[in-house]
Amino acid sequence: MTKRLLLIPVVAVVLIALSTIASGHGRPGGYEVWTVDQSNSTGKTTGGTLYIYNGRALSRDGARTTPEKVDLGGAAEQLCLDQTGSAPVRPHMLHFNASQRNAILSFVASGHVVFFDAARRQPLACIDVGIQAHAAVPSPDQKYVIVANQNGKLLQRIRTDYARHRFTLEDAATLDLATGLTPSGAPRQDPALRPDNAPICPLVDPQSRLAFVTLRGGGLFVVDIRSSPMRIVAEYDKNAVHGNGCGGLETGGKMYVNSGGGTMTNLSEFDVYSFRLSAFSLHPSPPNMPAPKLVHSEDELEHTDSHGATLTRHGRYLWIADRMANRVVVVDTRTDRKTGEFSLVGPWSDDPSPDLMDASPSGRRVFVSLRGSIPLSGDPHASTGSTPGLCVLEVSRGGRTGKVKAVARIANVDSAGVDRADPHALRVRRIN
Image: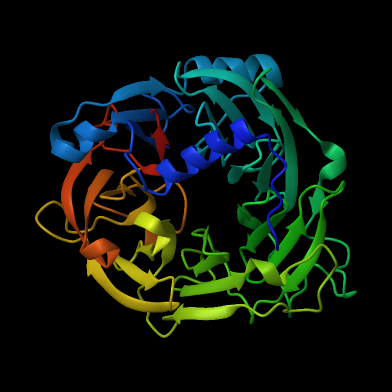
């Protein structure tokens, strides 16, 4: 797919500068690391806590860095009660828009999506999409947020006007993933093709045109996100793309998509696929076309669960977290081959259970959320960890490997003395 540039020169220069900083070129500016404990606020059945760390302090001395804390059972919950009549439950996935001025936080147990002024830490709007908002992903052009309504089995779209703080759920854009037919005439959800079409993580391409939508039971849809309703342009069955993927990124004109375990019907899974973006158009493709490339697979292993992912500096290496095996697998994006792996187990943790990941602007550090002993999402078989917190990884050999530099512990001890902390969402925010 050819990228079309329709911006005036000054705007183009600004966007190129931001892209350069994001990919690690040039001199990086300041940054923050946001992570969210999805366990309830103290003494409540809702809420959660947002932790915000100064990135450079965290990089220097992560174990001793004091974060800023935002109680999500406070202003954000009250805003949702005022605007939707219900409280948000279990903050799960976090993203920033392209300008880095706004944060988008999805609540997986209640279906709420909350938009924040990132600098002021203030909630701006709350939208209830229905049953579950597993992930809410902003388009790079800042016009939309694409929502995976997991148990509702819907793909939904929120129109975004960040300058005016206007966020509108567009009901006419909703795509039902469980009923109806694909472009080839096959059932969208079908026991033999795609047995469970709960969407997990939409991955939006750099042109803000297509979303790669992973499905819980296996299979994948590539969706035109600008049409109303959104429509399927490529369809894959469970044999072509395995289920439950939630670690995908674009680099070098390729969209990387993973598959993982962590569900009762599929406890162990580790696959990585790549799709050449130029092979897609807005015209429907035959089933399982354009064909994905299977980059790496370890489905024969019994204790593995591919989940979060990030790119090292210049996008050369793709890092994929394995929640169950407590490791990071490294893929060379030039050759599409696994080049190595490294363990996160050590004196800092005997069972870190790494989940979501993001890299610093310089590419010298990667930050990982570590799960707790009472996981609130994902099957406990895969998601239980012993040291809830935020792990700081030092990137070595140009991204070929890494090592643990520090773990910043997070705790949420209840009245019975039980630590219920369960960090999940994590993103790096540039503040240069």
